[in-house]
Image (cartoon, rainbow, N blue to C red; front, side, top):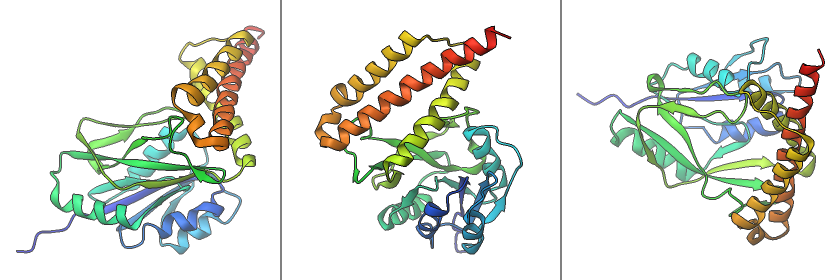
Length: 258
């Protein structure tokens, strides 16, 4: 009897990702058996693009954070294995081949982390804490879940984690308008998450965290080796940290004044 080949679901969460989604889903062609898209009320062509690729689309009315949203997508998957991918990421042909091989040859009690190469406003970043960047994205459907974090969610599993060799491409920041938008969004979500966990801040604390984020990125993590892009990235990391702790301080002020 010919052994049954393992099946693979791709899960994606989206909001207004029409500029990214077509390339993302195209990179999955021939690799996955189903695509699950959980969309957060997009107003562009995101849903139409997903359906054009044969995806199953769900549009819940509420947004509970990145972790809960990805768990919603995971709960809709039906295949043996799951590949979690963001709309701004791409599976290379080399990575697709490697994934197909490991699913056929590795034990069922294994999860896989993938090295990720990220793009920042014109080039891939090789230092600044962005390399090496291994992300756990491939796992048995019933052996893992996502943490409930509002932002910076992670896969939680008791399975043995094995690294793959080929890169996942991450087009995280195409231009500086996207940088500013994400600085605002991520700093707000991180501040809310930090406040819920009992953390507090001040204006001086925000300045200190911002300065430390710049020094860590540019000096300790050798962002200077990425030239002007490394300097710009270090500044935007500093801004994200500064605004996170400034917004945390603001939340505290608002709560205490009620």
